[in-house]
Amino acid sequence: MAKKEVIVISLGGSIIAPDNVDVSFLKKFKKLIQVEIKKGKRFILITGGGKTCRRYQEASKKTGNKDPNSLDWIGIKSTWLNAEVVKGMFGEKAHPQIIIDPSKRINFKKDVLVGAGWKPGWSTDYDAVLLAKQFKATRLINLSNVEYVYDKDPRKHKNAERYENLSWNEFIGIVGTKWVPGKNAPFDPVATKLASKLKLEVVIMNGSNIRNIKKYLSGKTFKGTLIK
Image (cartoon, rainbow, N blue to C red; front, side):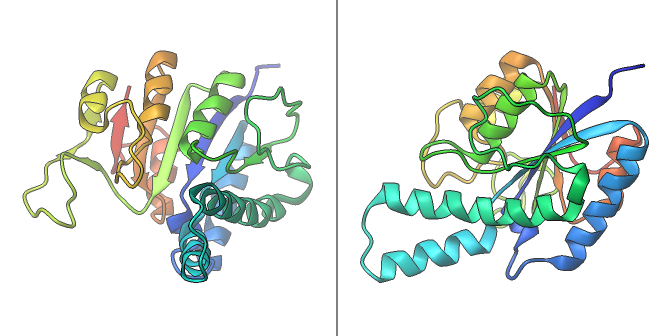
């Protein structure tokens, strides 16, 4: 029997919980994954924190928390909360535990594996790349609220140029390879460095467009940036 392809999806918190948890999106996303599973694919889903993360961090700051490490843990644990929601959607088809340490060996036999934030100083993008490495995945989809990689922030610059195809060297030229706190990068620079080394195919696309994700998974023309 042919080995099933494992695809990693970094599911940005901005589409899971743009304000409140987006139940409508999650139902559509669940249906998409279920259809793709029937086609013989398996999925590793890594969840971000979204508005939940920022709200709790801001509340903690306002009540006197000045410890960056503590604030980081609030963000990490908000990704765990989103991960529980995503894991719960798939019931028996999901691995029973949420993965919060992607460096450990995992006995993944189900159709869906859900992971979340690991520890301060590490992004969920990096967790996703580590799991891609462990399970020899060749494709990673980064779903957030942006449609493409741009040369500068399109929300601030009307003349921002979008990229549909980039080599890893070109992408590194845009985001660098060192983590800068608060930097608005479409994919974590440290994760970028490892993904480049692994020769992963990474796609940056708007996660709320379910039909577009389906196009990519079906090998059709899609909106987004392909990096390889």
